[in-house]
Image (tube, rainbow, N blue to C red):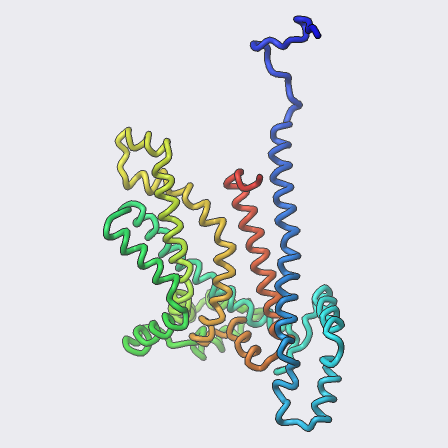
Length: 367
């Protein structure tokens, strides 16, 4: 087979012109496909978690027998079980539960006869406020110490900070919380022992029209500096106890990624030009090392919400974690399912938002 010279492309010939915007369409298509897939993953995540909780809660029986089994006559106990529908086939109860969730009806709590949606709205803001305080502590403590550990890497200070990160991460929240209360509240008397605010402050916040449930915002709305200070003083110990858990993760992650960035070619070139090590860490290697932090924030939110159960119980912080512990003790299936469903939604949505931010910051995660 022969080929005419006209059919052989010249190596010096320009490449065929592509349609305008083709490259950007490819990149945009990759980003759009990535975001759509991540968004669709929210629904199976919530479905799996809610399903697991539903069947695990019923593996030990119905809540009426657990709460009233020894105090009611068998006939009355059977009547209440039938009225609540717990004698129906398990699959029927499960389908009714899913149908209620799809219509925004999470049922009514058995132990205190409140709509679950009311419980979620009333106490959910307290848990979100505590998670916000904990994230602030994690950023303030974990990121600077991680940068410091990278700056003094392979020295005794670096080893000390790595051990400190392990201590932060591995110490049980109830232990660190009780220790902080013993030192800063009982021994020194600097901070309140428990609660979200003093009684006078809580009454002042409740008198506000349309309170948000986030005490810090409501305290600012009152215009009373004493109320703002009281809310912040009550938030210090639970925020620090929960925040140090995540700070340990951030410390080690920032240290590892800053050291990795310091070994890249552009940092080596800057070092050869006489740029100080301090400036290399704080200017050149700092921002690229934050990308992994953003990608793990979603996982840390799940950890914070899980740790909020112990933190709120330790400090009597009346949020979803505190109420969840109460409803678990009462074997209130309906309340537990509703709270877990909300926590699953929060975790899934936060993970989606984090994935979106990470995709815009680092295009490599889209493919």
